Amino acid sequence: MKESMYRYMNVGLIQFMAYPDAVRDESALIDSVRKIALDPFFNVIELTSVPSQKTRLTIRQMLETAHMSAVFGAQPMLLSSGLNINDLDEDKRKQAVALLQSGIDEAIELGASSFAFLSGRYQPETIEASLDALVRSTQTLCDYAAARGGIRVALEVFDHTIDKKSLIGPAALARRYAEQVMRPRDEFGLIVDLSHLPLLGETPEQAIVPIAEYLVHAHIGNCVIKNPDLPGYGDLHPRFGFPDSENDVEELMEYLRILKKIGYLSAKRSPTVSFEVKPFDGEDPDLVVANAKRVLQKAWARL
Image (cartoon, rainbow, N blue to C red; front, top):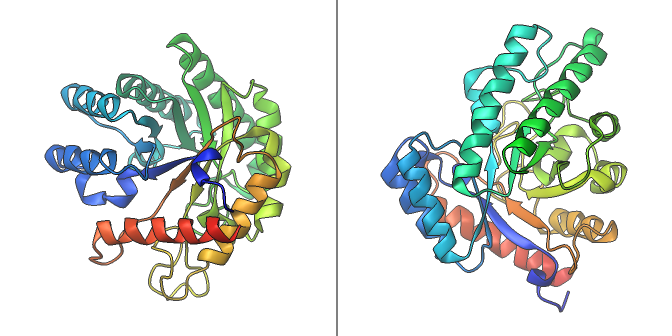
């Protein structure tokens, strides 16, 4: 397209994926946030749990100074804890809810506009019970977020059978879930990720059109699924152009085309589209980020 992509979207970067070594080092965390905030290519930064309140406030001040928005991703909190937000054991489900409620508190301190999480594993024979548990958990989180000032709650659609093996999941199930949560768009929504579509066996149209009315956020990334023995197999978000991977300029262009077709990319809405890319086996994080920026620019120019 000849028009600037910034007329249709805010471009973001998931800090904890792009700079994974900074997650457990507060000094490195602050340095990575500063690096992203200094780059005018990005309007949005996605952060995860920052245990130190002092560091949270430092980061918030940095982002306010840089005129940058923040989003909070609680996916690592769940994955590292082993807790499951749709656990059929009520005590364990409530532990997962409590963990995410603490994440909402952190997100608010960071000045984040939305809070993201993922569904947990499931057993095929009890999938309906797992869906009911997920809906109840989500409604509790939405109520908690509303009481704390109204930060939006969003669930990211993950793979269903290969790596994370999350309940949500295929587009049809994602739509059923969103319909049952029954919240206005400004309180709750779904996140779609280009890197998860091959893992789900869905095209952008198959994955996005059924959930279009619930879509509030989009990620762009890559994956490897051709063979379990290949480097990067699964949901590891390697750079674009990674050997034997699924997504590059053409795939991103089609993804953007569908997002524009459904009205997600819009000058009126200024939605967020964030990179979810991660260095692999010693790669330089800055080069991986530069790779992603180039791929988006090429895809947009050809749209």
